Length: 175
Image (tube, rainbow, N blue to C red; front, side, top):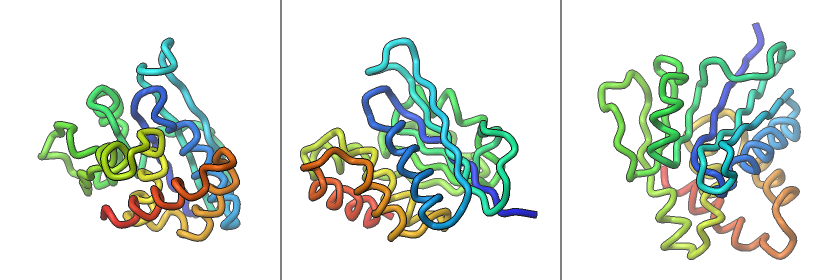
């Protein structure tokens, strides 16, 4: 039986979660695993609900869509409300600290200041996705730090390396 890990990254359009999903899948491949990534977003790209799905596996991936996720990241209330039912029992829920959640969930819950770290501490709202990846890296053993950092640097726009490295480090420290 192969080790398969399903992740759903959700929030609103413009938060960079599609890129985060691509980076997470790249990191899986860099670390020698199989990975697949898919995405969807509402009709209004910025502001509408968006999600990126990533499956990382030691073995073959026979179905490209996440059915029940091992880890759910939600950066907005709307995305939490929409996708919380897709989290496996005893899965990992990572939410921004401002999101109201069902405290009776059978899950490992991490409420973290992801958006305020990007907005207030780093003064760059667009790095919330990279802060999120740092937090996910700290929380789960899905991917190692070195592979994830390499994947980030391969995908971000030239000239943004320093702020993205800093965002990743801040995300690692949130947990």
